[in-house]
Amino acid sequence: MLFRVLATIFTLSFTPILVEAALFQNPLVLKFITDMLRGLVLAVVYIGTPVLVVFIVWTGFLFVAAQGSVDDITNAKKMAVKVTIGGVLLLSLWALVELVSDTLAGFSAATLLVVLLAFFLYVISRK
Image 1 (cartoon, one colour):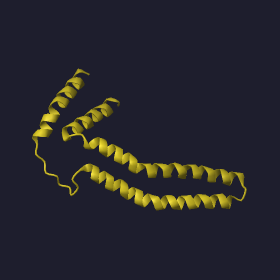
Image 2: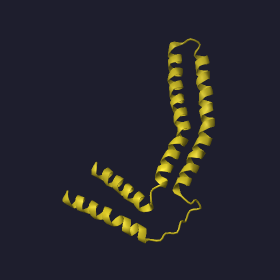
Image 3: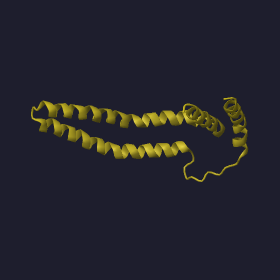
Image 4: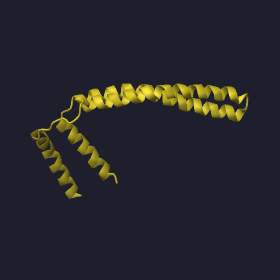
C-alpha cells in the first residue's frame, strides 16, 4: 500500500515536468483531438439519423401489423420506447461532445495527462 502511494505521488509530481519538457510534433492533420472527436460524432449522427428513421417506420409498421393482438402491441410498445431512447441519445450526442470538448479545450497537455493518470490509477486500485 505504501509503495502504491509513493509511486502515485512520484508519478504525479514529475509528470507535468516531463510532459512540458518534451517537444512533440503533431502527426495528425487535425490540430486538436477535440476536432477528431467532433468529426467522429458528426459521422455517427449522419449515419444514425437515417437508421433512426428506419426504426421509427418499422415500429409504426409493427403497430399496424399487430391488428389488436395484445402481445404484438406490447412488443411494438417496447420497441417504440427503445427507439425513442435511442433517438434522444443520438440527437443529444452532439451536445454532449460540445460540452466535453469545451471543457477539455481549457486544459494543457500536462493537466490532461495527470487527469488520465489519476483515472488510470483509480481503475487499477478498484480491482
